[in-house]
Image 1 (spheres, helix red, strand yellow):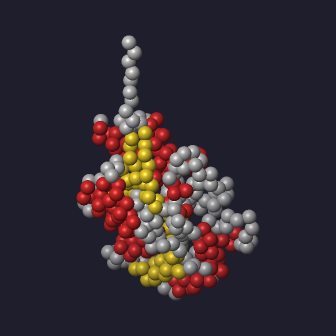
Image 2: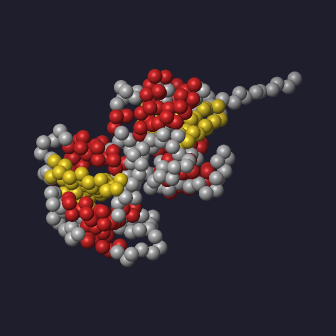
Image 3: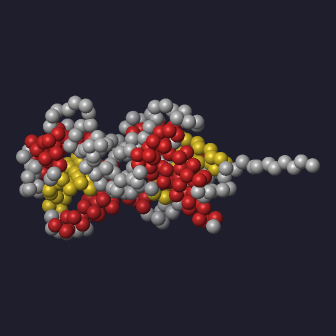
Amino acid sequence: TTSLKYTTVQVLKVGLFCSNNDTTLTPYIGFNKVAAAVIVAWKQIQREKLLPEFNDINITWRFDECIDSRATRFMVDFVREQFDVVLGPPCSSSLVMAGTIAKHYKFPVFYYGPIFDNIVSDRTAFPSTILLSSSARPQMNAVLQMLLRYNWTDVSFIYAVELPATISRCRLTAAELENVIAPVPTINVVLTFGVETPTKTKLQEALREAKQVSRVIITCFESRITRRNFLLSIKDEDMATSDYVYIMVENRRASFGTAANNDLIWTTGQPTNDGRDDDAKSAARRVFYLDNQPYNDSASFTQEVTAAFKLPPFSCSDCYVNDTLSRAFELFDAFYLYALARSRMRA
């Protein structure tokens, strides 16, 4: 006699929010910059046998473009169609909507996007929303401790308005700076200067206003060019001296950068530039640079994700990970953490 053994395919249903068309969003949360991280995480989950009850995965992606109404509709669809987990939405305001729905249905949502509104950290209001990024609050708490440590009382905050409000780290940083300093009577934010379309001329104007009222200047910028232009503005305003303190709040996970990675903050990164790298570097020597911890072994991870993009279901030859902008790292962690949590619940 011959016996036949049939294996039932158990499919894990994963919903993924990301962007596809909005070029202000795609460098960070674009499908072609992050999606393959889910496959890389799935392979890791299989190697560790975290979810042995599943032998296949179905990824359904939806392009919400950080539009709240779209994110709400897609989130309801994911719940109704009984998905196992949702990764995203990767924008703060959309996350509030999705997290509220997730609370009602006790549905797991894992956030992998950029810095978010601190309201989502409320575990009572968002009990089933898991955050793989941080709000701006921890960095501003660190700034506050520095101000208290050195008894710096009057500070200015200069930030660039370069990204839409849906994904702007610096807008949230400005709000959180006010929130953490407001209860401290010995420290005053005497100037907050948001620079729209931040040219070097506008940055110099902001510095001229700041030096009239304070000697401690906190900054937040969202592009490499703006960051370098600010350093040149410091130099050209004769403010690269011990009379001034600069605290640059960043989220590049690269600190000042390295020549090997071509991401030093005082350079343009381009083959040709204005020849002023030394001027920018002299200003950078006056800066406290507050950044998040770099990822471990990021080079091999970006290579693995880029390779996964070239295979089905993506089959994308020009998709790749930008390791200082892309949220692929957080997306990997989000899916892996879901699997780890589910595995431990089963145990």
